[in-house]
Image 1 (cartoon, rainbow, N blue to C red):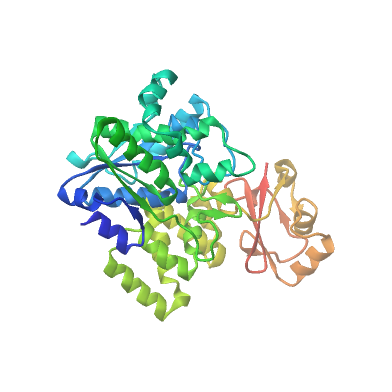
Image 2 (cartoon, one colour; image 1 turned 120 degrees about the vertical axis):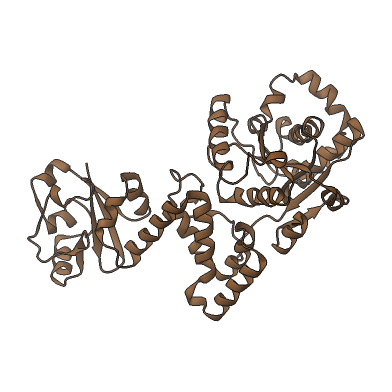
Length: 427
């Protein structure tokens, strides 16, 4: 497998430094991508870079994942309009542990010569004094060179300006490349296209400091076809951590992708070969309503991130909300998963002690919760047969509900019409 050609046909390649392909064709190359530890989980925006490392390793090369314990204390100004908050050492370590566990799901850390490795730049910066840094690194890169970078020019010409901390970021990242080149024979740095300036600062430092050769490759920044930001929803980021984004919501994010985006994403975020993807595209074009691409994309990526069991739960959750799966399915879920399933839908809390005494249907839905705005509205809809609790239609406004009706001893699921769900939590 040719790494660069793989990125090309998948539409991932953006910039590549001359000589990089020749280097890669000579044999195994060590290369790295940096990951930002500003949270204890990566999100789907990080997946393009993870996929780049996966292809790199599958092509026989050795991937390094650098987690920026040191650079996380500084903050990358690329693409930012304001300086971000700096993180404490304890918070950073917690974040690094979470990220490492996630990367281990994707990269092979036990495959012999091209085993993946994880490194933390805090390890080589923690004892690096300021005076040594400006003497050993700063003197090799001119201010003119640093000022020419777009990430610097855009901030300096803006309203907020740029702190010295952020100005020096490209030197810090450049030294990362130098250190890995010197100590781990890393001759290639990869990243998103917004990282080009920082990456070539590293190649320049290697050339000026040790007359060495190093190379750069960047991938396309992922955007939606409508120009909006990829990986964001009204609820915020889509995380890889199931505690932050439930597997059901994760699955739905990919399933709800537009047709145009699905054709792009299935190349970037799956390992399907070209023939398989083209066959799926032909099916999609013949019957767009079946959403063949979206289903294949959502299945593949949910299984790789969360596993087969969680994928099956996501499918059942979808069937529960939009199909005919019975209420018994909720008994297979823990409390967090139930809450995750109904995340974004109306939820109400009622007193468990009051429920134990019994509450009639109208009071339950219009007094103890706000499923209906008035008792009159509740009575009318119940009489019309349009309300169900736990997927059983309410037969009369005088029906009584108590603790025996709770799912998992905690939940009541109210359905108004076919698709309007409400969750009542008894505490």
